[in-house]
Amino acid sequence: MRKITVLICALSMVMLCSCNTSPDTPQADHTEAEHEKTLFAMDTYMSLKAYGENGGNVLEKAALQITELEDMLSVTESGSEISQINSADTAAVGISDDTTELLKASLALNKETNGAFDITLYPVSQEWGFTTNDHHIPDDKRLEELLANTGCDKIHLDDAVQKASLDKNVSIDLGGIAKGYAGKIAAETLKRNNIKSALLNMGGNVQTVGAKPDGSAWKVGIQDPEDESLLAGSVEVIDKAVITSGGYERFFIGQDGKKYHHIIDPKTGRPAENGIISSTVIGDDGALCDALSTSFYIMGVDGASEYLSRHHETDAVLIGDDNTLYITKGIEQAFEPLNSFTDARIVVIGKTG
Ligand code: AMP
Ligand code: MG
Picture 1 (cartoon, protein in one colour):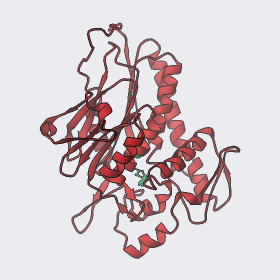
Picture 2: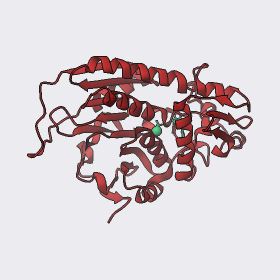
Picture 3: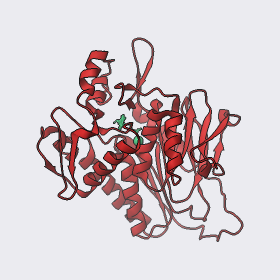
Picture 4: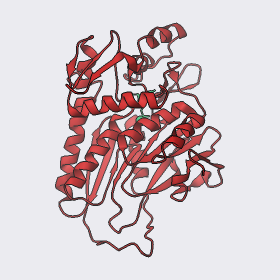
């Protein structure tokens, strides 16, 4: 069921491309061949499109890289580097460049987000059953016990020798950042191989390379969090990642009839409830955007706005639970509300001047 949902979402986001070439934009060759590679990786359907000569071969390379990253970073595959770290008790484990970079970024982001982004919540996610789909609602005492073994101060990374270890009973999971990182690495491979135009749609995560073949911006859809068949808006971007997190992506309905989703507030061990129902982050670095989209969902509008006022290079579109749209100044022109959001209240957050 989740796979079908993700596929519909992925397809609805693929190239919502209305042309937007300004009069002074040089027209590229419109006849550039389109190449597509589809795959199921990192628990989602992916559609990778590249334009121009040799696109097919380069996409094969990028797809292979994504599956290699999945094998390295997956928390559920027993041979992955993350599983090795988790099962090593407190021993230090040798790790690759990619895992080192991701752990380093995750630790830095934990600080930057005042603890909202926390990769040590894996035992809490397991307890809720998000990793096995065997869902249940833990009681307060159990959550308290589990939270005692969370916190990024319990991760020990020696990036000079590329080794990582954990305190006893601590486990990590890169589910909030790995897909964005994979998009970033795939985009770098495409560029290195002379691809000037590509659209990588990785289920809720979109990574663009350059502009569309005609030189205009990509138009990327943002899903309506309450109706997966509709879009809440779109953003026009060139050479950026557009990454969305939402409780609607993975959840279960408890016996009490309430919805419980997979983005965990590290302070409570419970699904985050801070007034946001969808969080999209737009920027140059897909891994950073991925971690921030998860974090903003937890931090709420005020926390996100405070972060964004210090980081002008990052843009965001947040949807509040009263359907207010919160957007940064940098994306004001590029953002268009759609469908039932056409008349929604829009509030500028982050740097307002
Ligand atoms: P995303 O879909 O990118 O928002 O990431 C959600 C996934 O990140 C979850 O399925 C968990 O694997 C993991 N996760 C949940 N809560 C957190 C958190 N507070 N910090 C970091 N990762 C989290
Ligand atoms: Mg994320």
